[in-house]
Image 1 (tube, helix red, strand yellow):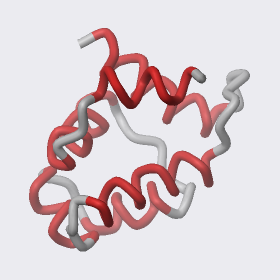
Image 2 (spheres, one colour):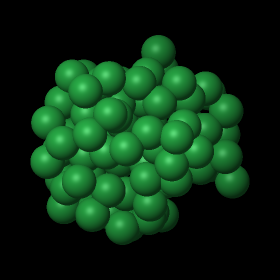
Image 3 (tube, one colour):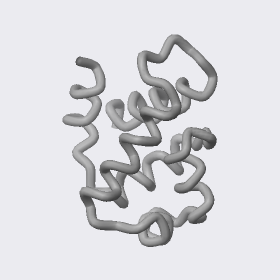
Image 4 (cartoon, helix red, strand yellow):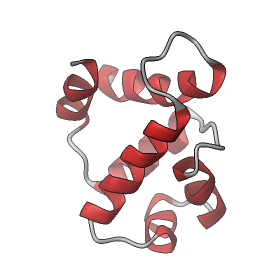
Length: 91
């Protein structure tokens, strides 16, 4: 669960400029790439994550800050190994 919190904090820090090495566009691209790799449309991901399609579109477009709960729901809907992803982002 710590890795999930760390990842969600990384996403949200992009929107508040808290010394993140990633900008919001890059985080949106990561979510988009994971979604495409999972062969999901934005609408399908939104439905699986119990969020609006607009939330997914705005997140992928670098315009949406999400709560830890929403972040967790999106990542779980994508079936991502959060520990592995967090390690990759730290490199």
